[in-house]
Image (tube, rainbow, N blue to C red; front, side, top):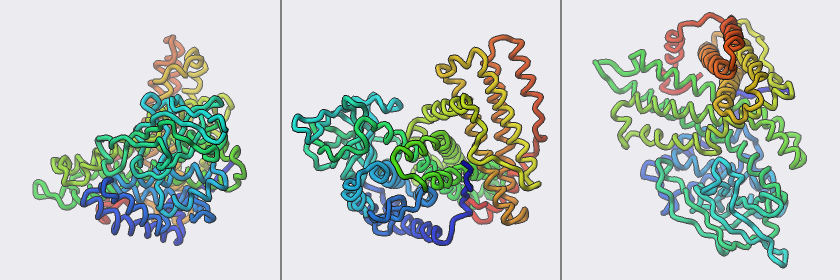
Length: 558
């Protein structure tokens, strides 16, 4: 299927009004709470949820029949991005509107939707998602929580503990996964059910204004009507909701990254050393440009994916079709999650560096951003697990001969991007050589050779970002012309050239290690070296051009 790829520039005035409402909520309600120290104990978070419900932010993806707006992934992504600047509350918020609510939307019965969605949408109730256990983290489906049907056949008796549950102390209802004879099953558990208790708040490195605790289940009676989805098919809910959560997390990471960039530029314009503002030094400018380029790539990929998912989900009329479609986006969602979380880590690290010693002090916000950001490479499946999922998905495509059957085939429709496309085409050739290397002895055991899978995932992730940035830039050029879109062209140029270099290095590492005999290894390395990519350019000059508009506005802008 070919999609009419979506970009942030495609939002209409109606959607901009939603963005404005979200920004006002952030400024007038959330920020004052963050500044005084967001506290779970005094119900500050619940008050914010109620306000978010009042202004409609909790129902973006909820059908209108249950109090929502049913606006899809693009608008939900926009809201999640803006809320990325909301510190710890961003975590509580995104868990609630994502994994805490969407299981009911996609898998709930009519009765379950009518009972729970209006409360979750209004903010009267807060939702949570309970999958992780002490011995089932990355191996999340290896659950020790069990459920047994009582003799009367009226209730399931649930026992177990779920660890590191976001919103644990705030939630009124939880989506809990447990094993029965037929397999993993999802249950709706209300906080007031007898036998439900919550452990003490965890002492964490960051996101300290969000609730994280153990959910304890001791002989909890769950009415049979509270089974969510089909008995024995809870893994469909767990994995597909996690796919969507990875994309939502990517948007939140992008929002946090933009906030870190804004703080950094504002500080660098004000702070003087050697009688000169920090932003006047080209090494600082390079840092800011790199931050902006990473954001542009992540933003382009996330909105592209959200738009494609919205188009694909429009025609869904059964749970089976939903599961199939969301599974088709597994690679894309995982690549977005990995890329955005690692971009954010890079950006907050550079933000602290630009602030120098002050960045290490708690009175400066970047110190908190640095600690909060670290969890994102662990949330929603570690980046290592996501890379394995990406690589295994790519291997399946190779087996089916579908590796290059992209949802959007990039086609150079404007001469201004010839150089950019040159890197993209040559990067695909490099990955093609790696695929040839898989035909050797390594191909039979590659699923046990995780270092190779990691390289394969990273190469495809880089290619995805290159392609997404180019699709966005091409669309903008066709609409507005070169003179209006110079910064997008420069950013895409940097992404494509640096992306190609990264893929080339990974391909050399892959082939050098994958082929045991020297002759075949040498021939394939020569094939890599023979690829004629566009001539490398002066990245320093391009990055200085990129940063100028950002310095003037003190904000990320393209």
